[in-house]
Each structure stands twice: as structure tokens, then as C-alpha cells.
Figure (cartoon, helix red, strand yellow):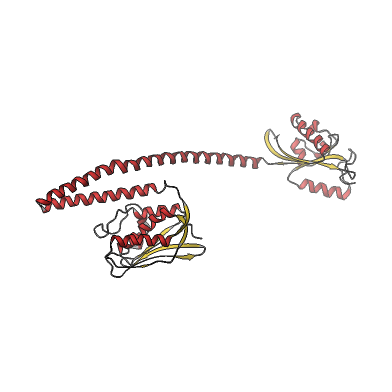
Length: 386
């Protein structure tokens, strides 16, 4: 007979060597195990289960009813589940708090119906495993997760406030600062025209400085606004031909200085998944720098291309212009960082900071290689290189 339960007076449902071997196996388990018959009386308990009930010996449980050994609240739960399992001939898993040595402990409990060879339910077996530490770890993880979510919510709110302040700043710069600057430039222009009939070299020079600096401030404000707005605009990715964008940028540069002779080298196409508008800004800056820094070079050469490294595509802009000390390569991507005199190469020092911000928004990286007098190469990816 399979899983048959012997008379109560026997210590366990097995005899001889088989009984001793199975009992030793059950005692070695890191859980408290038991068997209860149809009448709710214990037919087998492990010493771990006896310890759980606060009894010194497992034998003290045999033949006794659950209600005699368990606290009433726990006994009622187990008796109910015991009857349900006998009726359904199934198994059930649940969690329960027991007090052990005056301390509440979490236990994972599983109970299963045992049947004889005829399929009749004759007993219920079960085990209880202390999972207090696991539950405490879960609760600790929940508390940490809740705290992280709270911090994320706070920082999201703070970021929203900062963005609102940035929008207000951008509006202020665009209107409140640019308006008086344009008036300065306008009145300086009127004075310059007024002095044309009675030229005074010193006055004309001073006015020219005023106009030039006003125009430079106008360009700086425009570049700062563009930098500030990079993170505010939505990233609209699509299939973009960067080579076609590069050709457009270089065509505009040739139109601005038609007398310059510059050799250009571009691939037929260079497809990338990116935001077309933002990448136009990137190429405006990188190719614009290449055009500017090759201004004094006979046989100026500008190249745009790409190469593969592993599974990643690396794009580059290369020139044979003035170059720079490679020790400053990382610093040059910060705002207002300049390594040449403004009289030699005009600019606001904002362009490369804008480029890096755009590349970062695409999940990529940008870096540069150069040496003074030997040109420069700017590399960038639109995703983290593999």
C-alpha cells in the first residue's frame, strides 16, 4: 500500500531499516516536517517541528491532536486547511507567522494530501521553512525601492522647475538682453554714418570697436541660447544621410567665402539613425571649425567619413589646419574654452560644448586627436561603441 498510515501506537509509518533511513533523511532537512492523519492526530513529526512547537522531544507529539499542541489561532487555520486538502486531494502553499521563543517568525508552509492505493485520502503531510530573513530582505528591498522612487519623483520635480527657470532665462536673454544690444549697435551705426561727412580716424575706430563687439555679443547670446535649448527639444530620430548634410554645410561655407580653394573629401552616403536637425548643428560646428582653422593653409583639405570598430560606426571630421595640443582635447568640449586668439580665429567658444551635448543625447561619445600645426580629427559615435 502506497503512503499507508499504520496504527497510532507506532512511532512512524515505516519499520526496520527503511523507517530508520527515511527518518534520518527527514531529520536532515532544513525544515520542520510532519504527518497528520484524517482525525487530525500526528503520526510523524521531525525534531525541528517539535522545536517549533516548543516540545523537547518529537515523540511527545505522536498521537496527539493539532489543537492540543498549537496555539488556537494557528490550530484553526491548519485544521481548516487539513480538511480542505483531504476533500480536494491537493496540495497548498501559504505563509504564516508563528511565535518562536517569544519572537514572531515568518514561515513558508506547504501541505499535501496523502492517499492509499485505492486513492482514498488518509493523511496530510507538511513542511514549514523559516523564511524570516528572506521576508526581511524583501521588505528592506521594498523600502529602498520606495525611497528611490521618492527621490526620483523629487528630482523629476526639481528638474521640471529647473527647466521652467531655463525657459524663463532663455526668454529673458532672447528679449531683455538682445533688445538693448541691438539698439547699441543701431545707434553706433548711425553715428558711424554721421561721422562719414567729417571723418575722424579715432572716433571711427572707437565706433567700429563698439559695432564689432555688439555683433560678437549678439553671436555669443545666440550660441548660448542654442546650447540651453539642446536638452529641451524632443529627440526625433530617423534615417539620416550625414554625408548629404555635410555636403550642404560645405556648400554654405563655400558660398560665404567663394574665393577660398578647399579640397573636400566625402563618401557617397553615410546613413545613421539620428535627429536630422540636431546633427545639422553638429556638422555646422565641426565642419565650420575645419573650414575656419584651415583658413591660412595652402592646399586646405577637409574630410568627412566613417569607419567600423566592432559593431559600431565611428564618424569623423578631419582637416589639415592649425591643430591644437592634444593635452587640451578633453577641455575643449567645455563652454567658453578657446585655444587660439580671437584675432586669429574668431568664435564664441560654445560650439563644441553644443556638439558634445547633442552627441550625448544620442547616447554616443565624441573625442579629438590633434597636434599643433598638423590639423585635427574629431571622432563621434551615435551610440556607445561595442
